[in-house]
Image (tube, rainbow over all chains, first blue to last red; front, side, top):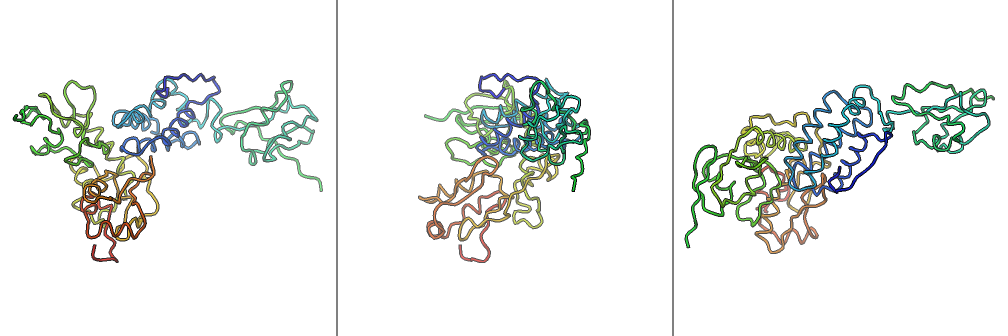
Length: 193
Length: 220
């Protein structure tokens, strides 16, 4: 994929748009800046991919990615620039629907792009008294509901996914959804004076 | 031993070229326009960094920069295929996407290479669909008497070559890397000033007026 002869195996939890963005970020750091196409072109590629993964994709972005990638591939001076757009070109070819979901539905099928996902706690499954998620949350977004279960304050949540990791498998109550508005709203109870 | 003359075909016109000549230089000498920014005559190997002088050589799968081709056999060249034009326009758009297009207030207005190339390619002086990404600050004092305008610079490297070919200790160089690449000067301000006293080769060679003589210090 990156022209190194290596192979990367990913499961369905990987977001190919985010993977492309990661590789473009890498090329950005490796570009020496000598030739126009690699120096400027890959920066524009990265800008568009960052837009997509942050949920601000626009109509026409996919076509622009395709054209820009082909130009960089054909126009660059050395092997770095010539292979830099390969992750974009191949993922656009084989996973176009993932890109389209990011642009049109603001949805990340792999549920990896943080601005496009939300975590919530399934109240049917949450166990009263277990405090794993609340204890590990770095932003105090997890609160106790009126019936002593747990809820997530979406305004405070930074989507780190720690609560999902620590939720004991016998409960498995933390859910991840995309787009974020699919998460049911659980009100934080008023603090008693 | 006399140099062998090779007849190459450029845009259906046969032209006679000395063996070992540079294809871009030969075309330009015969009045054939090929957009270019970074080519300098007399360099052992062309830097080929501006990526504008693409031509299609018969038998090759994709366009090649003409400045990298040394004529050694009778080749057939096309300077205006759709693929060539596509790459040239894309390259120009990329350069313009990091360029402050403010021609009226630019000292290079009317003698600017970017204007000339855009006119030749029949495109406007804009970045098309690309977002403009300009650098800060607009002007940098890289030398006691030279100002550098990063948002005009196309990083062709001509100024660096001009400085290297004239001074035993040249002062100009590329600095940083990737998207942040820019022109910078070596040494302390005093050393820089003294070693190139009276020379303005870099300013004169710049195709886009990215290096300017600082107005408040006359007498360079």
